[in-house]
Amino acid sequence: MIKINDDLLLALTEKAKANPRKRMNHNFHYELDDPIQRFLNALEPDTFLPPHRHLNPSKEEIFLVLKGKLVLIEFDDEGKITSHMIIEPRNGTYGGEVSCGTWHTLISLESGTVIYEIKKGPFEPIAETDLAPWVPQNSLSESIRYQQSLLDILDID
Image (tube, rainbow, N blue to C red; front, side, top):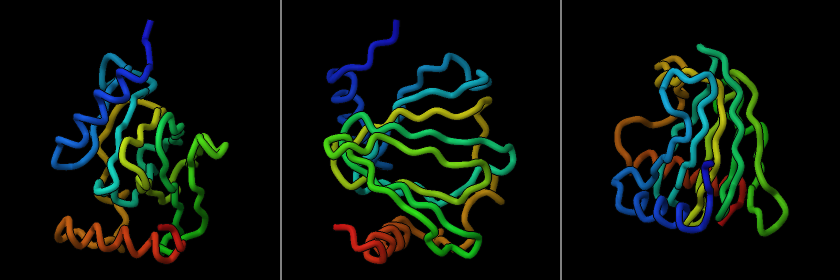
């Protein structure tokens, strides 16, 4: 039996805080080629998940927030925001699902945010063609400024 409890979430959050990328996975699938990828992902506010899509191979993604708060953002092919939702279990929003081939990103809005993520396997690194071409890729500081610009556009503190 896999147990998802406060001890696991807290330990994973501490690992994320200590990681230079400010995030940490905890996989429940046993192999990278398992047909379903299931894992926890602890996301601190200073992490950057570049906008991307899963077109090749085609995959939906499901995000369930177990603790904390984040915003899920979808984009069109030019990088314009098409939709977003703040996911915060304390306020009755629990998760979202992104369709195959849809540009998207997640931004953690609160320290200690942990999500349960599910997508079709096998694991494949995101193809270069599935990384958003409109996002600055030169430095983490540029990426964080871009991320803040998204929050400003959406008027999210």
